[in-house]
Image (tube, rainbow, N blue to C red):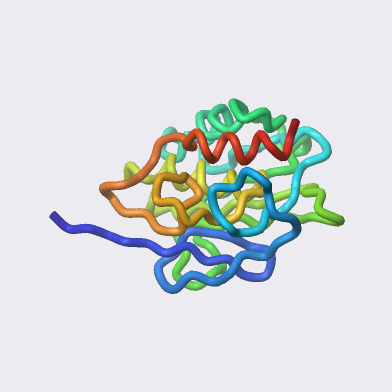
Length: 179
């Protein structure tokens, strides 16, 4: 069985899953219940509204990924109106060398105001597409990479270990920053 191992990168306010070496994530404050020692990237003061411009296919399952994060208490919804969105998901290659996805949250004073997610079109046909969307939306929600291999925010993934939903620790960490 062929196993593919991917490494997540974070660079200058962007975070993503990629082939290559891991770099430290950009940070604001640590979360007290974090499953990792990595710093928290910020929080939303308003509702996060996600527009899926990936073509409406079911490969990345953006609406389902948003639903998974809503269970943590993150006030995030989807919209069909791009003018309402403060998070836009696009099916295009990342600008981070070798990345299969990235998220670029924009924040000021620890408050995230917008985010753009790039999901590699080559992953739209793989079972990891939904996990990739969950992972990158987690960055938009403020989560850094996790050192726990049981986390959707784990820096590495393979075809045999993709997660289709955030773990209890992922949800607990997100919830700790929204309640």
